[in-house]
Image (cartoon, rainbow, N blue to C red; front, top):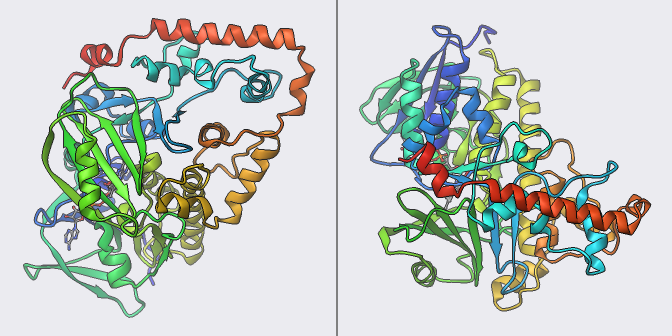
Length: 499
Ligand code: FAD
């Protein structure tokens, strides 16, 4: 097999994943070295949901040199400081999984350990009072970080909400203006070489296109990775039993909030994502515990404004391909696997897959050891996110439906049991090997779902209580003053990026 550089890559699929792949390769590959062809079918269309992101997307935009104001305008976007989880740990409870820091670490110990001690004695307010992003969410405020020395405002962490269709269109324009060729057509067949590598794809028109490497962004059907290469799938539905979603936009009735809201329902949960021109909504549910009709009705009964268009039903199996990269085919997006959008991780996984692919960028022979390492690292990313999602379901007091009874009692992965047990003991939680969610995210969700650790970091007791009380009050007051200084989210959009 030739070890020459890749001369042609075909991307099958023009949803978010396909155009993210095309745009980043158009930017990173030297012009004229490798031809990129993207094939998509307008008849088949895209999933067209996927409107919330996490802060890592800023790195993707930076890589592409995207002007943020222009991007927000053209995608009807808004800013996101975190997610509010309503009714998850118990009915009538809520908490924020907010981006960025929580309080201010002291003497090398995370702030939340000090807070746990004082809170247990009734001497501290709720954690939101010490968290800039949560306070800004509560007051519907937003601004980008400013250069302000020690101020929490120098550290605002944010992501975006946007219209997924407009996002794909934005990236399409970007990629096409940098040399990517787009082909309209339906792939109906795939031809393999004697070594099992993909040689070409055939379109309905009869035209056949060869390439050295193929990126499967064809969505749930996994046209190349599964239908041509029979890669296999790990099914995780026993841990994450939701297998359907019904989604619909509605008219906005209020200023857009700078956060996503996730409300637990009888057999799943409902998202609310504010955009400039509408609000995105969807009910993610387990079909074993609720009918499609009831889920659809629950969604419609819980909208802020009048629905825009008909609710769209989507079916999925939570899990991942046994290999994300198989022979000369890389799967990205829904073709690579799916985990529900509870923590807005799908678009990030496309980005992470692309970043890794660029660091393992192959020659024509696709060295097996590189492919194995890519698959090992990506499996780790998926499994750690999977655990984080399961956490939201298994740590709950809800016993008001069959669905929640199942989730509360299901067996969970050992890796997650270990994290929960360690947190329960003395509030410690560690980010393993650069996993996606950091210790603060784990803390916010574990505590928010209802786990109060028995103890806290032993070094906390080194600080005299009077001093600790003074510091907590100081931090609370700095957070309050910082949020007072921020414009409302709507004012910020009006000023910088009104669509
Ligand atoms: P698709 O959008 O399905 O695109 C597939 C492409 O392949 C299309 O262009 C189609 O035309 C083409 N295609 C398919 N078959 C053929 C063929 N035979 N010939 C030619 N072309 C073909 N992610 C987030 O990050 N945040 C969220 O909030 C979020 N919410 C979600 C909510 C739901 C209910 C679902 C299901 C997903 C959500 N996601 C979210 C995930 C996100 O939507 C996807 O990761 C993202 O849109 C990528 O989709 P895709 O490009 O892989 O697939």
